[in-house]
Length: 198
Image (cartoon, rainbow, N blue to C red; front, top):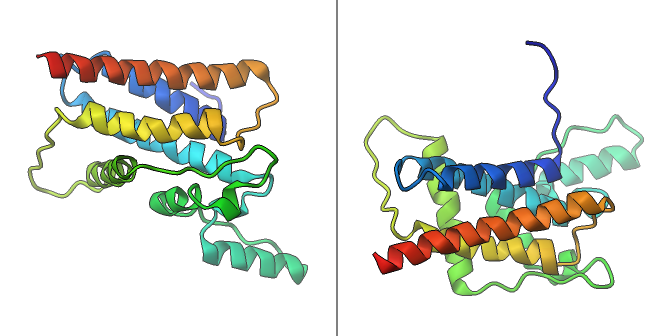
């Protein structure tokens, strides 16, 4: 088979949430699916944060050192260096800053509750543990995972619906993103409700 895999920030955000939903459908029979839910949710959230921080030039989603090197090269008419994306928790800090997020007339910064910040940090920690798995045994208590993921989906929902920083001219793509976010939230709510009632 030959061909190319092409993607972009929006596609990564949506397809990752679709992967979350696919794995949630199987999670009651296969608890191992939580690994892929965590990795995919983390990827979607990261891409949505990058999307809202992009603001036409991408500077707010770059590592500070990377941004400074790029600006210096640009000002000196030198070849532009490659850039590095800021780390996940740094992106999360930036979506909470008014001076960064309030770039358009209706833009708003994210104002989290403590549960949201704790859940975002925990999601990042679990994802890193899965990605950088060491040669030992590790167990993840999963009964609290639907609630943790819902707190992270609160962040995604705000960024997609309320931040004013996601500008998608194609209505089909915009509606697809919004519907995918809402469907994912409903699936986590259903799973959380089932765990509460069991």
